[in-house]
Length: 306
Length: 217
Image (cartoon, rainbow over all chains, first blue to last red; front, top):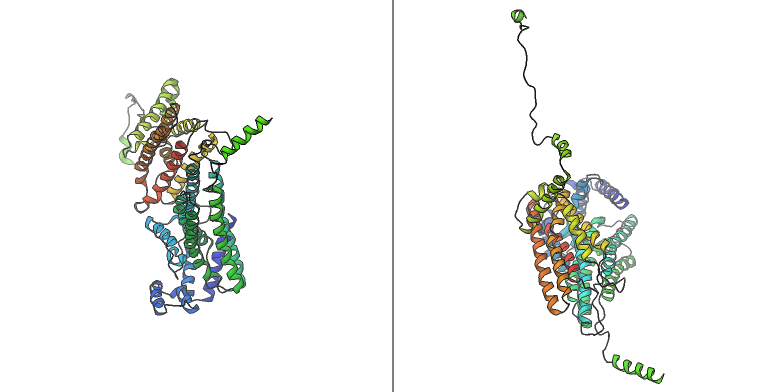
């Protein structure tokens, strides 16, 4: 609840600041975003500062900040307030998922797909699916790896579901919270052109986790090389979505802080993937049947000698 | 009123008649009258309602009877039966066993609540308890599957028994999902139906997974 209150105040503060700075922001017409691809074609190569300003222009961010402030006007203890976060249609959710899996270079996921309508449906259900996919795939993969062994007795390993749930939901909500707090703090020191609301950050993180669902299913294949290739591949895809989203937000800042922020984002993302692979999926070549036979001989020899 | 001065009512004419209000069958007065009926009637009425809903789940048609008179007895009975049957799984280690009673209970009820909240937040017109009722009753095919699995496992556990269990659980999972979708899909806005059906699919998939991976000690 405190987070929601902080977010609301931040939204209203932002809106008030931006309106004071640009009193005629409201006169910009709605079809401004349509002109943006034209400008981009005019300057194809290096996305310079100027072009990015037009791409994520001050007017656009003014408008979206104001629209975001106007939309969520119901008080946060009513049901209608939360309904505004589920105001998406099927095709919108599918588009956002597609945007997270196929990152278009130079296009920002938040501006392109979310457009001041962040939803909580995607992050919540993608995380839920990921939790169960990892638990089920891990269980299946362990079953196949240990299948031929005589001493193996199948166990469902149900506890791991709760561990997976805690980890993934903590990552999907606490890391955006920390990142949002950090960006707000930097915003108070350095005037950034681009700033994201808390829900938009949660949205980006939630949708960026989608690529891990097919990856987790493919991790059933008990080959170390295959698993690591899959992990690097999915890390590149979802990491690039995150980088392209957050780089414009920290770029105006001190160079070292900007690089450190983006590096931390990527590091945490990689840590999640590696941790899940290590904990839920046993290593493929774990036990070799040959040592069991000499051990039996060894013990019989020992008992005989006694 | 001068014209009315002549009107008078003779004292000899008796005023008689009946003043009664016909009691309709839907008036709340009827509830008081059920106090006098035998206990067997009361119980049988509720049991018949529950039984009718079970039949509706077995032959899912788009009927509104399941939605109108919701009750949570059926889901409770099914949930407890399923959780009890999932006991006695391989519990040699605390960490690796199957779900405990409380975990099954929580998953079913918490999952149903979350799905209901999800459909209401997406703009569904169904009420909270009606949706819980439908989701709970549609667990029935999976409870039947659990029963069949336990019986098959009594006969032995091998590849053949696994294949039988897989087929049975798969068929019942499809039945559950289709039955609940048939009841719930109409109350959703048309361009968000898939968004509402997917969590239901996930919910029954998780329950089916718990049933399929049940291995006796």
